[in-house]
Length: 98
Length: 373
Ligand code: SF4
Ligand code: SF4
Image (cartoon, rainbow over all chains, first blue to last red; front, side, top):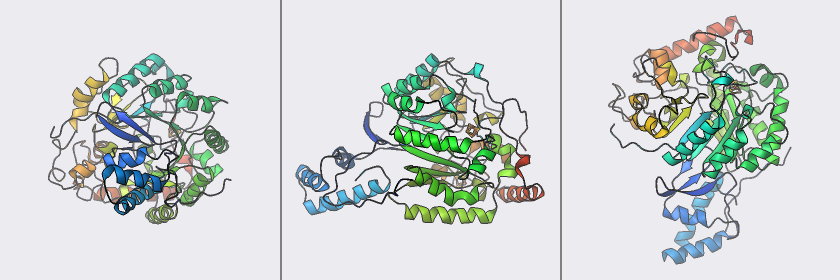
């Protein structure tokens, strides 16, 4: 029996990535990016997509926040709250690995 | 049509009706197709390619037991080459050495493995297959070793509803990302065996509490999808997400259907892939258009605020219980015959009290001709 996994909590030092069963893919029929998972297909908005694309298994959450704040010309703190909430929700659904 | 026709997202491909198991709740039709009626490799590949062109993003490879198709690796590779997300739905019994690894190498994205029980004796008895449980455990291990993400599917009914906590432990111990606690839907063989399968009300309530608590406890550890039993519900489920709205299925001989049990609606006739393209069937088939959207609805659905939430429920259940495929699903509290659901539950309890063993099951087999109760 393998050791029981634990719920992961987002911190600035977490390094998020997409698990093997999740993938982002451009759909030419609907001309939009889709996130494919075992049962569901998600249609992320631009901001969600920008976060998910940075879940590359190398960038820390802190780094992702700094980049997005620069890109969107927004306050780091406001961006941080949104990014952390988003990643926690997706991690809780096992759609993002921390 | 009161909304624009959208392309389908998902497709369920029943590659074969052959199966080493004989589950009495199988959703396959009573008249099972033999191997000589199955589409050949090239036809499935053409169908998949047309599905991808049409906008299908996910294909669930099912059956029967899909691994009985020797060309499964090829079919997976064909889908994978088109970027389609592939989910293999298997009973996990009798899969030859090396094949799971070959499925993974061909590009399989995800594997869903059914367990008829959480205890070996239950699995073997419900599937009517000795040693089945052990083989399934082995399949799960091999899938994990091959790096495949895993869902455990637990079809729930009277004879295993008390095993729900054990199903949760089993799925965790096998390293599954997802567990489906799916109460059986009374269509296909399950309708024939309804009296034997119907759980007791108290067990249904207990199950709901157990699942709710486990979901809370396992947030971020394992996803639990719960399909509650229709007959005990207040509102129906949005069957297939709405008739011919974003998904469809294909039977082993290439017949294209809006859902599993659609062929039980006698007024409809269905087309086979090959006589027409998939795109033509999806857009023009009278059977697909019969219950699309909300225009076909009668009262109380027609003016109901939930009409685009559950799409009036299941057409086949309306057919089976109300005798009219265009009626409101009797599972809905607003259906004029909703009380019949409670009567059917009571009838089943009485029948089960008389015969408490499963000798009464009509096991799923090719050539057993039975009429639904
Ligand atoms: S439900 Fe049971 S009998 Fe039917 S296809 Fe699945 S494993 Fe086979
Ligand atoms: S009346 Fe029809 S639309 Fe309204 S909840 Fe019942 S089944 Fe759904």
